[in-house]
Image (cartoon, rainbow, N blue to C red; front, side, top):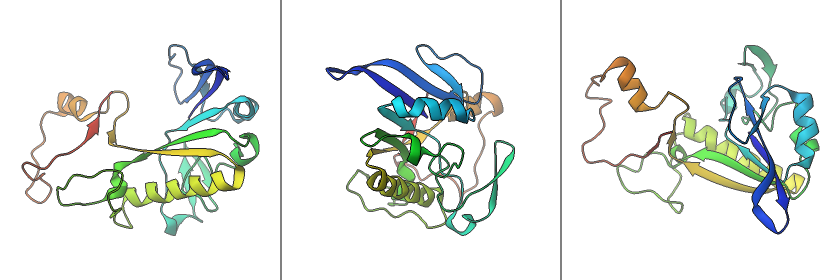
Length: 199
């Protein structure tokens, strides 16, 4: 999650302050970092934010929505949403984020599913399998759209290609473990394009 406050209405490309939640104590240049579970601080900051970017992935399937899920080593009971930000009872985003707040939700191109090697763009059909991670992302997208209608937020969904965190890209994996030989059933078909975003 990154929340920002613009410097002025006439200069929306500059921000007076940028906040970012983190699980580590690592400093990020020009970003005021906050521990992801510092709810009191987050509830104090969010009302002043005009832009919030959500990069946290969905966490559970529809069938498990009423079950207890372990997050960050602590059990929490999710009532409905598969998106952990919308569903966090400690954050209460529906109460803290003001109407007209811009929300950017980073989703995944996995929502498009299998197109048998054809090119995919924003107009392509959504074909993700209902038990896949893509289906979870699609559900989270719809949750954000519905929440925006209810709360008066402005939501943009960004369907990004394979995202990798610090030190977890395919190239890092090869450096650590060497090239893994896949079996025929899991091998990628020759000539099929794929998309990845590396740090």
